[in-house]
Image 1 (spheres, rainbow, N blue to C red):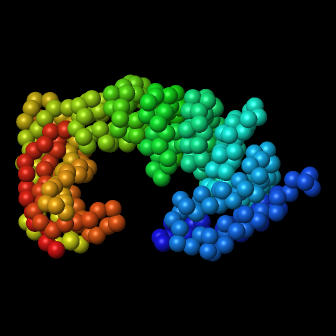
Image 2: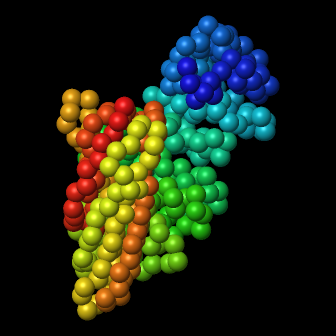
Image 3: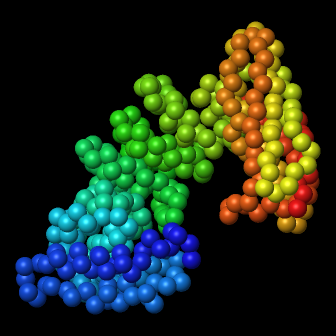
Length: 371
């Protein structure tokens, strides 16, 4: 198993059980002994299981030990917040246990009370994954509450408002309603794009980038609106949000970012025609503004990777942003590594590179990847 899987381990579960045992509700009839949680923390229960399965095992044990009593669990969790050791990766399964019981509870207000615990717990790790359970149960109701978090004094809560409602949150379950109703979360990012916290703004940029994957026109409209009344951080935030669209050559995103005009392009120029796995290659481009007005260029390069069956698949990489006055020339270069990585398998054979300038492809250069 990988190092990430060991983030939920027997020692951590034992520590969580100790936290819960110390957070004793006053009623003698409401003091769970946490036997299921103890069993979930045994080495055999976690050994060989991936992180997601470990979280699920601990979550389910918590739910079993409180007899699916959301009020009891909420009481224990609230009391646990007085202990500083109640933080870190143990928080993940706790938030999910609370969320599962809160969305199923028939009592009025249980849903909102569960969301309030998400708000209180998120600065102990993050409640972004558990928030998906609320969104899947009732997206509109959840967003109504989450929108109020945008003015919370804690940056972790404000960041949760944006991050937890992203349509493509990494590691998280997909919420179909977020795809069907892309405007549902726009009030959240509208309220946060000027946030003082870089941590929050980074999430807002990723949130809008997620929206752009299925709804590029909406994303461009939002970015244009923000850029129409920018502060000192808006340009960088929209640049982050539009990164996928710019790589795709989306005309609206390029225009909104001020990438206009054209240039004479020489390249791509490679520093070698063959290399081995583990080495890297340099890609260069020479750009000349032959027009009479200044031009701003988004310069990328496209590697056409050879696949196992001989086909190729393109991948766009950021190269540079270049501003050229009339008659000016600039040379830019970028190295691309072919070192082994877990996210990509390199296959020997013919590869090629293109340049992409303001969304338009230029030239082709081939090279051979040796085994």
